[in-house]
Image 1 (tube, rainbow, N blue to C red):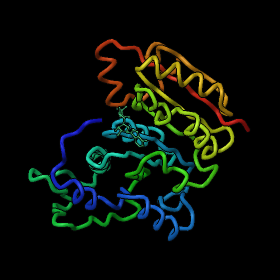
Image 2: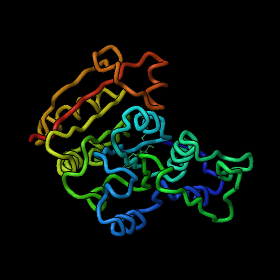
Image 3: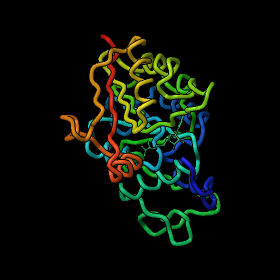
Length: 251
Ligand SMILES: C[S@@+](CC[C@H](N)C(=O)[O-])C[C@H]1O[C@@H](n2cnc3c(N)ncnc32)[C@H](O)[C@@H]1O
């Protein structure tokens, strides 16, 4: 996802670092302090992960609708994750971006010049963002951590020699298999039919079990539960059909 460079992106991310881990080390330090991944959150709930969360529409809506879970949203581009984190914080009543582009807390205080908004744990809600590449996933999480892993409209990497970067490449699928709990599922949506055909094949060849797929998610029985992402809304508005698959880790 291309984005114009955000004004003081690093500072804005740091202001909200109660809900965003700006790098792998800050996450690993916090997890070590808390002992377990689930203790990073106020309530101990089953965990879900979104990879490549973009500007955060999906995670903001899903985490409110399915609030019996805690969520990690991972994104590799800082200027993109900052938008997602700010969207989340404002949707949870934690303030808003000021007209000058600084974070303004609910009491009107403006966090600027490297000041951090220390949000009490009980106000942080059920999502934490991590600025990181999915290739680093196994440095962050223990095996059997997640109930569900989502990858929505990930980059198709169409050029020769780039297939290994696809989020449904065999190496990624075996990583997801390791991180899912038995019975947990990997859920994948894309507009790109070549990427989808490739993903059906890699899933079938993996140790995950393909449990569902459709070439028309919005026309399927799964549509009632579907939360649309930013990309999905754009594609749907143009009449593009959305491909979707679910794959389960065998018990
Ligand atoms: C095409 S956008 C889709 C964004 C959003 N999921 C949506 O559906 O609207 C793909 C996003 O995934 C992120 N991404 C791609 N590969 C990634 C990786 N290996 N690790 C983390 N994020 C990744 C990109 O930076 C980009 O923001």
